[in-house]
Length: 226
Image 1 (tube, rainbow, N blue to C red):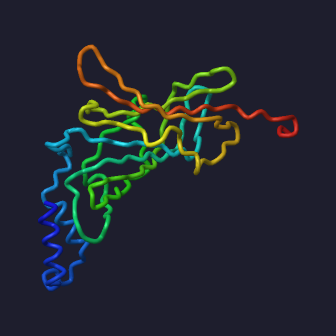
Image 2: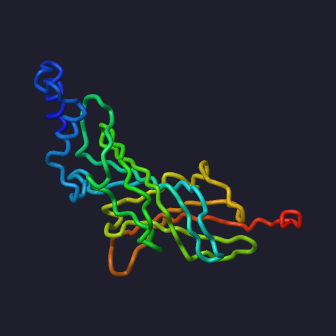
Image 3: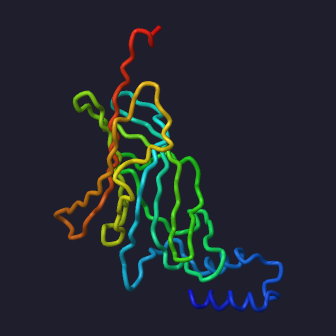
């Protein structure tokens, strides 16, 4: 496909009348998507494993009752789809994630998370795919450790094992650069850990990424309560 697209772009540049009135990006997307099957797993005969990188940006604490934590966050997901290859401008395109294959990475504690809207994926000419999804997440596993409260968000593939999707964390901490300060709780620290589990039934590994948020209630003096 890559050679075909390259030769066609050369033909267009030499004979612009071939696509008179048609934008190059319009033609490129139509060509890439012509035989694209969004249900097909993008592994190749050379490498059947798709490396998926994952990260979290914490935006705000929506609600916390001491056990249940609700947050707004951005979840970043990155992988490579070899069906998206081309050798011309534009250097990247944007497509709705509903139109392409995406890894089924979910929050294990609550797969029915509330998605804010469906974003576009940014796709470059080497097949790299990335999208950041605004989402509302809720867990009820928070527990007190000394004077802090620890809440965890565990993500993994719902149907693929580690031989198919090698899930990796992009960072060792949650991104707090866009976090909106809460009136009652401070975030003391965060961590991101990749775990790999094996079960007696199966030889396949099952990786997950666990995001941990440590909270501490803000102590207020008598003046703050006036």
